[in-house]
Length: 277
Image (cartoon, rainbow, N blue to C red; front, side, top):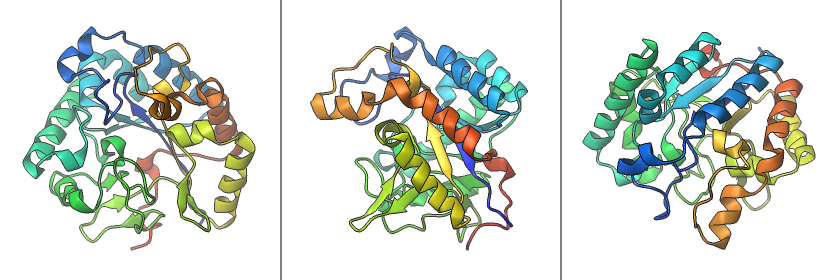
């Protein structure tokens, strides 16, 4: 059986950057210039043109502020999953604070579209060795799958030794790590965020075709800000500025190319008996 490919959008705005003092505090989010509706609309148009349905990992705060946007997403046939409420790094939370954040997000999402999410993705893929307790919290809260494992090294998060392909965890959760490829030095992510913006399309397609030739699922993710050249820019310093804003102008074309090259499904439609255990 061919393993399906999974496309997801982390529904957040331009000011939801992590691990920087330049990002506005939660108490000021409602005062920032809002760009998520416009950028999500552009992505919805591309998805419709490609006849692709995907998963939106939605911040609970976004669900509260833009219920009509969530309704538009759901009515188009896309899955609504959880990205937590306040976009906090998991390893900076206690288990109880994490549980509270999950429940607040679930309530906001259910209030917007009448459905409680079955899937979750941690902000910044911040489930790492010292916060892997979060996976058991997710299972105990009734989630069916997670896509928070980043099976490579990264600034905030990362489990370099984790299984890099979809797998069923001992607690029953399905885990969907983001796509990585193995190099002589390390595993490298390439199908999402700054990685997708940085690498040329030809190289991305080469790696993706190689994975598909081995019948490996592709797990692609993007943020609305990844396609927004006109977004306000935070004062991040030279290196972080490059990571956050490189390649924005060509990113939507890369997404369109990937959507036309491969078949994609929402996470909810991944066959539960197709993963390793």
